[in-house]
Image (cartoon, rainbow, N blue to C red):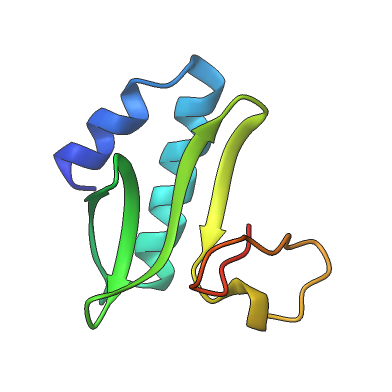
Length: 88
């Protein structure tokens, strides 16, 4: 895991650190070719320069977001309000 993403994760509360570390590990495992970095203050993974998945801390917990998630046909994903057809 990149040090900047680990630093972001370490800034979270104890339980959230575990969630963030798990998410980063899983994303890295299933998208090994993706570039990852802190983007708009949150960890984000990119394929061919396009954001694909990321996560951030909200009051209610950790939000996992997929930039094209509106196309996934998953009932549990909530559509975002941006131009990227995002869902989380």
